[in-house]
Length: 141
Image (cartoon, rainbow, N blue to C red; front, side):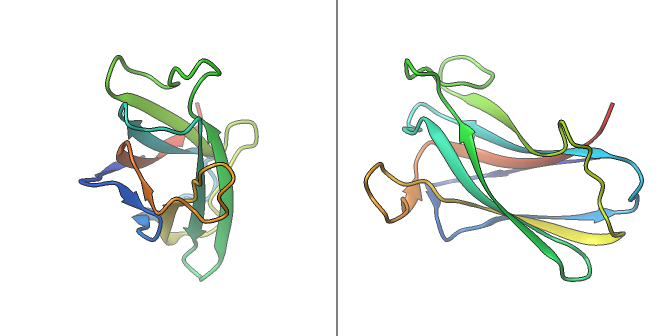
């Protein structure tokens, strides 16, 4: 239904949102929403914190703070792929609870990172090791 990636040419700054615009024409069909990341060996965190805002056509905004596990306890990265690049397919909405869009029209999704170093209250200004960020909408099978 919808699947796009944004490549990052430099470390991801915490004040630089990644935004996707998409049109919804069906409010009856349940869908799964995924966030997708490709990380390289310089990604240094065992988890990932994202703030995701879903903007509806009539102005409603759903804002979620999400945490994803990115590595095993031994430090090996989760995700698909070998060696340098790992692809992470992260549930956003759907999965156990079917998700339906509530309005027909133009939506937007905004993603920012909120990682920080343990013991530091300030967010990490730059997130190293993220190559690409993606968003997909998939029909529930």
